[in-house]
Each structure stands twice: as structure tokens, then as C-alpha cells.
Image 1 (cartoon, rainbow over the protein chains, first blue to last red):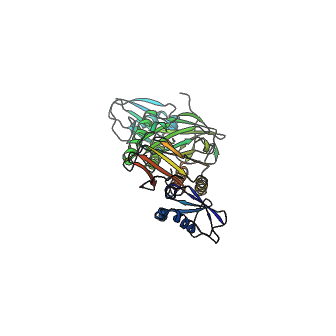
Image 2: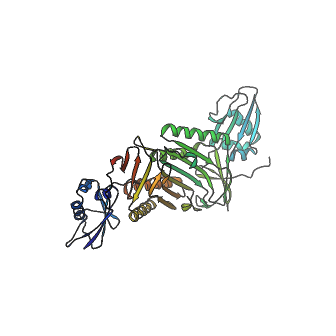
Image 3: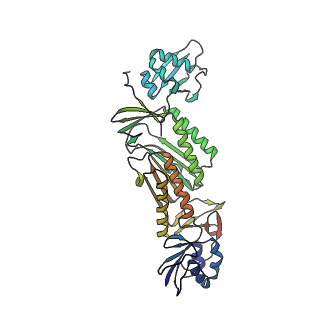
Amino acid sequence: MRIRVLLFARAREAYGKPEAALRFDQPATPAACFEQLCVEAPRLEALRPSLLVAVNERYAEWEQELLADDEVAFIPPVSGG
Amino acid sequence: MRIRVLLFARAREAYGKPEAALRFDQPATPAACFEQLCVEAPRLEALRPSLLVAVNERYAEWEQELLADDEVAFIPPVSGG
Amino acid sequence: MRAVESPTAGAIATFAGTVRDHHLGKQVAFLEYEGYESMARSELMDVIEEAAGRWSISGAAAHHRLGRLEIGDISIGLAVASAHRAPAFEALRYVIDELKVRVPVWKRETGPDGTHWIEGPELVPTRPEPAD
Amino acid sequence: MRAVESPTAGAIATFAGTVRDHHLGKQVAFLEYEGYESMARSELMDVIEEAAGRWSISGAAAHHRLGRLEIGDISIGLAVASAHRAPAFEALRYVIDELKVRVPVWKRETGPDGTHWIEGPELVPTRPEPAD
């Protein structure tokens, strides 16, 4: 199962790239995606308490079960306007 | 003592003219001005409960004592905006 | 908006009153505004000064049109600038709310039923104007 | 404003966010906005639909700029039209307040002290970006 992950703002900087393509052999969640990213970029870990999750452009839960080709985004506190 | 009186909107229509020049031999008030106008245009009387008074472009009391050359205005409920 | 822009402003809130094609369920063809112009200007200035005293704003501007206005025309334009949005909104709301009760301007509506002065929320039939 | 004008609207309230030359006492030279554009659009649409469900409004429009903005530039423009002023103000306030907490857009400030991501009310130092 492939999952596309997007990172923004401070999370993008901490990860070093704006997106990642992950593969899972078993059911996955945004939390599992984040763990995989933290293996690559451990400094992401510190941001986790401040991040929200979106799945397919909707705010979602960290433990929501993902479907193939879902798009997961990690969203730092927003500051638009 | 000369007093200039201005009338607006429905009060202007009831009086038939937008202004009047009044003369008083003794101390006068906006209420006294209004009485004089009502002699000329009795249908003004019915509007009195809805009117506010201004003296020299400031809201004022009906019984405020006027000075020579004061400008008195009778102000129906406003509806700007 | 240009009248209130500045480098220290982060928020500009504006209000435009426009001429509606209906009022209290009746059709409106056009409006006429009458004002006690000199007093309207000084009352409006007072209202803006009161707003500036109560909220931290960096600028405010207001303009009311008088005379005949057609449907869709802007009758009143207000703008308030502030470093932050909350004072801009609150000051703007104060200015328009106070304007509507204090600033000596009157509106007369003309529609299929004739011409009516608007005084607050009620419709008052207009008497024909006698010749001067 | 043009986007929300209509003959039935009597009130148009607008809000413009502009780039300030200071933030939390620090000088700002310029801003950069980043957005999750597709989601930002759909969140903003949701917010406007919620506002239209809660208040009687006849139109609403919003536009957020992204990328680098200079002092005085408009970053966000919102307009709400309604027959009456109260719903226009309340809906406008709702849209901007919700936008500020829900719509995925981020602001990075650059000033004499360097570059900082703005996350709510606090300043967070930015890490240098590693090469991709």
C-alpha cells in the first residue's frame, strides 16, 4: 500500500523535503507514517505535539486507518491571514 | 436676538421650507423656536415627540438657553448608512 | 482603504452600505439622502475620535454620499486600520452603529408605492412638499 | 467587493490583512507565506459555507496570497455581503477567525534577527533548510 505524505512549514524544514512516498505491507495510520519519517529525520519527533494531521485534505486522527493512495499531511500550527 | 433655524427631512417637508430666521426680544430656547414655527405650520406639532434638537451643530436640550446668532436644528430620527 | 493604509497596520476592516432593491418587503427604485452636512461631518469626526480612544487603531476614514442614489450604489464607506484585527473590527462596528443613530443624515425611498422617509425601522408616508 | 455585490445586498463588510513592519516588538523586513493549497481552498470553502448556514448572507469571497510579500502588501482579502449589516459583520468575523485557526497557511517572517516561522502567537527560530 502506497501513501503519499506532505510536510509543511517547520515540519517540512525539519524533514528536509516537502513530501515522501511510503510503502506499507499492513494497515497503516498517520502515526505510523510519522514514525517512518522520524527514522529518516529524528528531529521531526520534537514537533509531534504541535502537529495536526490531514488525510485527503481533511483534518483527521493520528490513528485513522489509511487506504491505498491516501494523501497524509502533517500540519504545524497555522498562521495565515 | 436673531436665531437661525434649520429643518430637515420630514420636519423640513412639514414646515415647507428648510430654514427660518426668528427674532426674540427676550431669552429664547429651541422649544420656543419650535412653537413659533408651529404657529406658521401647525402640522409640525405632531412631529415634536420624534425630534431631537441641535444647537450650533451639537445635540442639545429643548430648554437650553440660546445666545444671539445661534443656529438651531430640528432633527428627525436619522437614517443614514 | 488607501486613506487608512500604513506600514504599522496589519488589518484593515471596511464597511460599505449599498442601496438595496428592497426594504421591509417592498421594492425600492432609488434612494435620496439628505444631510445636515456640517453637523454630520462633526458628529462623524466625534464618533471616530471616540473609537480611537477606545481601541488601538492607526487610522479611520468615512464617507457618506448624499443626493439621489441608484440600486447597487454605495451610500456609505468606512475603513478602519489597526495593527491587529480585533480592534479594527470592533472600532468599525462602533463607528457604523453610532453613525446610524447619531449622524444627521436621512434617507427617502422611492418605489412603486411612492416615496417614504425612513426613520429607524418604520415607514412613514411622505407628504407632498408645498411650494417654497 | 465586486465579487459579492448584488442588488439585494445592503451591506458589504471587508477585511484585508496587510503585512506589518513589526510583530511582537520586532522589526519585519518581509514575509513569506506557504500553503497546503488544495486543502486551504477546501477548508476556506467549508468555513464560508458554515458562515452562510449561520447568517443570512448573500455572498462571500476570500483570497489569500502566498509567497513573498513586502510591508504594506495585502496578504488576505475577505468580503461578505448581506441585506443587513449585522450578519455581514458577524459572518466576516467568523470567516477570518476560523481561517486563522483552520486554514493550512503558514507565515515566515524575516527581520534583522533572521527568519522565524509564526505559529500562533509565538516566535520559533527557523532551522536552515538542508538541500533536497
